[in-house]
Image 1 (tube, rainbow, N blue to C red):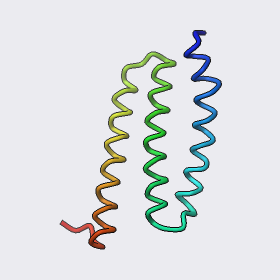
Image 2: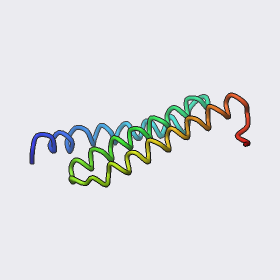
Image 3: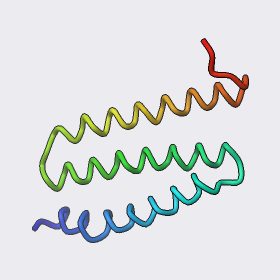
Image 4: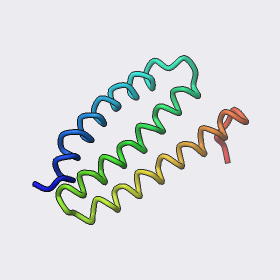
Length: 92
């Protein structure tokens, strides 16, 4: 194993796993809707980082496409929630 593979396997993945648990806790029990949305947003972005790290480990370029799609979904979530918080409706 190369140094990057060891670093990803033994440092990055365990830290991301711990952070996922904390993000989901805040998303479930957050005091306000803004805190919950921010936790979900960071969860999506961290998941895209995880997909990128796994893509590096298994040397798969298809994981890049998964990362891009996930980041775009997180951005769409931000837009819709901001619109809802601003106007109170999602309508047309």
